[in-house]
Length: 297
Length: 306
Image (cartoon, rainbow over all chains, first blue to last red; front, side):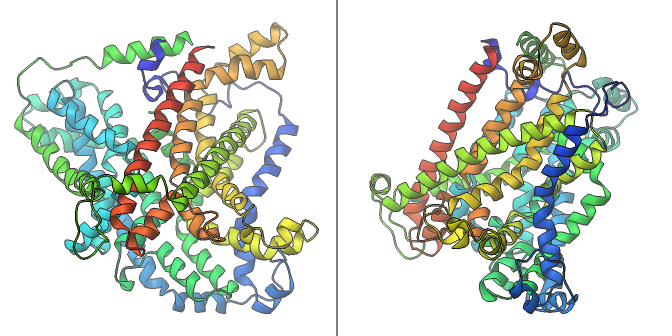
């Protein structure tokens, strides 16, 4: 029963083989499984396909069919109308600003904290802080939801800035956990060489450690980006001004107001999904390896 | 399971003190940590404590309040709406957890086999991860309320818009959740499967073990830790379901699909039940923690039995 004492997070990943095992793979190609996987992947694509074709149709054509038919004539006005009604440029700008700054602040601050914790983990104070952050992972969001709204309203943080701060701070728990394990695997000798040359602790961190953290920065950056871009509940409860609305929130409001304009609504969904989807399509392998690294470290 | 045990011990020794013992670290290290601790305490721990405090009052979210002792907590257990929300959340979370893990493990096995264009398929299965649940949820909502009634007109449940059917409205929510969360689970299982040395399978097939035997004797035991972590994280996440419900049914019809998080949100913000729903959130926290711990214990024991 020794296994119970060790968390699987630390035990796994050690014996990992390199991801691409294509070179040494001498098995014959399995066509049955290929076909099966192809069919299964359709379930992923069906909703995406539906979103695209409905967004391009005229309301008349949509009423007559099931929604899956290809559009007979393409109606670009759907996008123009959705652009107006959801105040798309404003929502996109808000979401982009919140996401970009949340990612930047998270990378710059959480890595520093994790560095100090990782290097001093043998001291009670730092160990205490580490477990303090870790324990917060178990606290579900609903318990802080109501008070945090009061607090952010009181501090005039019921806006984009407030969300940036909350994402940066709430992310600490998971990010410190991800960074720390990685920093501990960086040999101390690398730092000592810089210290002999007269670098301060800050200097060591920014010039030696931070560049070495690039893979973990990618992981934390991707996780924070996807979270901040797609999050619904935090903007829903924290933001008060309509001018501050993020993309998911704008679509939520839109949904309530224009219940039956499905073609316009779908154009709006597509515009909200497109930016991150495009980024993903162009950096697919990089994103997947980043997320994998974070989950098994 | 001996390999896992050995690596666990190895990590334990690695974590031993690396620097010579001094009583205090350099001040710089404290400066690196303090601001984060203060910010975290202020934005996370203080709200938790404030919530805990108000859960013993009758605060409505505005106006004056008095202490009411444990009466919020006592009332929770008599409140049908609350019990109904817990019932729905658990039913949803258990189904979604099982389905997500079975399906994503199956797909990960397929992706780990020698197939054509593996990276392409892997990329496709990961797409749902980058899409907002709320927005995909709206697409699903159209699918269930407008498309399927026409396509599956011969099946009564679908013909009459399943989202407005009190007995079946949970089904689309489970499907949306599984559709979305498989993306992440597949990637974790896939990286688990890639840790298994191919020699094990070669040895097993020499001994005449079939595919199913190989799965139960090698594959599943070898990815036990991944299975445990996926099950615990899925259940914990699904219990807090919110976006899915808002997008598909908004808790309806009636309160048939009202989850605990949605109830806390509604009661707390628009229902004048700030204190009462905070008490609900405290109970919810205790329930989630207990469930996660029990699940962890049970699954790890099972892991060790192999």
